[in-house]
Amino acid sequence: MKIGIKDYYSLLGKNMKSIEEITEYMDEEYQNKIKNAGLAKVPIDNECLLSDMIKEVYKKCEFEVELIIVAHSIPFINKNLNHISKELDCIETITLSGMPCAIVHEAIDLARKYIEAGEYRCILVIGADKAYGNKERVFFNTIMGDSVIGLVIDNHCSNNTIISSHIQSTIIAPEGELSGEDKIQKYRMVSTSLIRQCIEKCLEKANIDLKSINHIVPHTPNKLLWDTVAKFMHLDRDVFRDDYIHETGHLNSNDSFYHYLRLKDENSIKEGEYALLINPGFGGTQGCTLIKA
Image 1 (cartoon, rainbow, N blue to C red):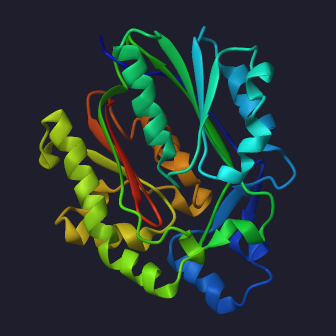
Image 2 (cartoon, rainbow, N blue to C red):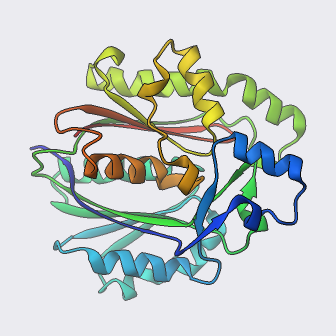
């Protein structure tokens, strides 16, 4: 049994907006901080409902799936998804939330465990996050784009096989950007160590050495973060594949999967190579998934 990503579909916000357009209410100094983080434009759609984006991605699915797992990082939108299964042909549907920026890793790991246990053969994991206004998508010197990705997880995959996953939480700044300054600073002091720990645990489960990893596809809120992680872990910066952060911005919980699949489609990640996808969430959550392309 080789469990992996059999097929995939993605949908980004239809309006590509520049940093200046989205942050027109902010001063030039803050805009420059965002640009220095590597962003230039972000796909957004303030008018479209997340549930409509989810349905659009579902309609692209050509496989007969037995379960749908909808994962999103923003808890307050859950009430809008309570009846989503009725709109997805009444296929059994569960929703996962919380674990900021790492929840799709949790959903992938859950799907893999369900299939390993023989409870399902084919599961559609939908990672879905969006904002509804420009001001709410700007935080911590980055900008959140709107994106939904659908991943068909199946028990017979010759490539894109899921080797291992690791998800961990050490909550230090529980309110995110609204946490006290002391907690924010405390989190920033240990975040790099927590990222390394998550990566090492994921590789340990797979019994694979870090030197065997061809690509690390990271969460993309900020290039500067991965400059620091690369130095801290004594890795070549080119291993970290944040190639398209300038045109996607911060795609929240599903960005590492979006970027991995884009790089794979472009043959920049080649069949048989190892790609390690890592999403740290501000406050204390990290998710990591190792894939053999």
